Length: 303
Figure 1 (cartoon, rainbow, N blue to C red):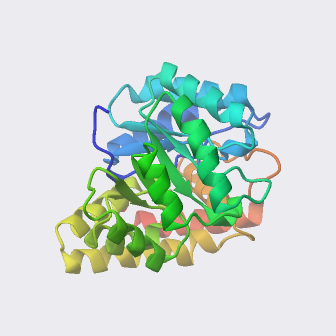
Figure 2: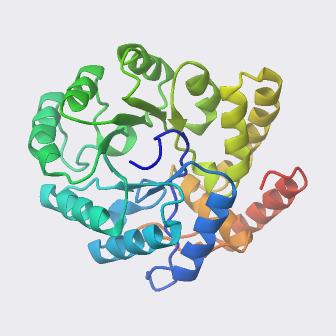
Figure 3: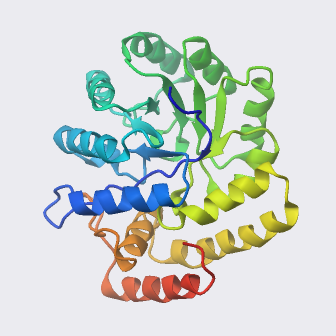
């Protein structure tokens, strides 16, 4: 890889038009917004990117255009999680051709999968991947909470790191302990509220959804955590907490995080807020709340 796997890596939303096509102009504006905010990488087709809801052709179009616009300025990670074994390989191969750096893989998400089955799955899949792979623990969407033993197996098979979105800080610390003598295996936090704890205790980076709209805020919090500047960490964490208590509280169900993120970007004039089926964007009342919150955040210069 040209650049190290570390720091703030936003799980970029996928800008869409009303007809479901890729919002190309919005994509370019969003990428420039993220890079100008100082992010260290961009993660395409993750949960916030609605990856599993998009057709293969749209995924490939996104990967191609995003890699072109990013042009090697930051790391590009691509989610290849799929119910289809061959589908994951297809997207991985396209990612390689487009110029991506890393693929990210969570367990197939329809049938319940055992830890042993997941290891066998990795044994069969990983030798076919053309790029370095990060294993992705996302039990709320996949039905499987990867055990430390399974993560160890992934590492021995060639995985270069793990993104943990379980929200279980104790589990995250157990990963840090397991791989403390293997710094080449990167431990990436997927819950942005735990950014300081993860970095100060040996984690390497954070996939922060809020970095889609306020990238500089999360980069500053990461840097303060690296420098162990507790006063600055406390100040910036208060702003992150405000995001949780405002933007992330609009709407219902867990989809409100992605919907809210797209809504903020729409209000900021960066890209559209249309969602891929089956999700639908916020209604007018919800957008009104988002506009109010964005105005409040603009007064504290977080963008």
